[in-house]
Image (cartoon, rainbow, N blue to C red):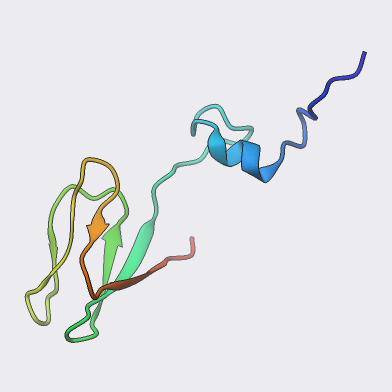
Amino acid sequence: MALAVDLLNPSLASEKSKHKLKRLVQGPNSYFIDVKCGGCHQITTVFSHGQTVVICPGCTAVLCHPTGGKVQLLEGCSFRRKAN
């Protein structure tokens, strides 16, 4: 009797949809991001699931604010996910 799904080699799509503790290899959903201010172009490191408002140290503009889950970036800010 063969299974319809390979349990040792799951697809990437099925692993992403699972809860972080139910994956084959457990891992967090959070990450750090570099946020570039739209006004002064200074880069600030922000946690993806941060719980405080982040203000640009160069021009004191608000970069992102918490939403209860991931932070929400404001207009004019660009970001990139940091590598490990």
